[in-house]
Image (tube, rainbow, N blue to C red; front, side, top):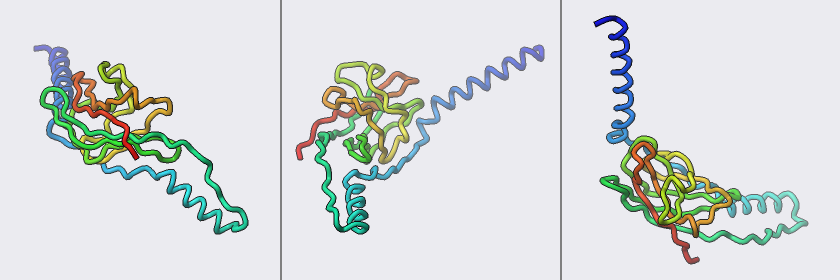
Length: 177
């Protein structure tokens, strides 16, 4: 065998091994995440009111009336094939933003996992991508775009782009207060 052929063979072997590791390693490696709740808007307002009342007691602070967005929650269920997913989903309002929060979350790990909001009955890839999955275990937060309508995009999907497979889904429903 010539030296040029040996080099090409070595490069091919290294590429195959790297691709194999990328595809297979998530099956036995876990990534745990433990994000805190985002600071709530009501906590920030209370601190602002306390600071204002301490510095200037002559002017009472009246919070502006705001229409609170509806709260949504749901539970994850297993995805396609043997992909197991569990945990709770809920919306959290903080810092004038709406977050999707996963709690007690666990899913089968895989390469290239993303979080999507999808209209029921539609393909996952056609949904709203919230970002890469931060970890396959633990509590985590995802900022929702301001224009998202959770009554329309009510399905949360953990999707593997490499395998084109849903690892887990959860349906959001409005919670009564």
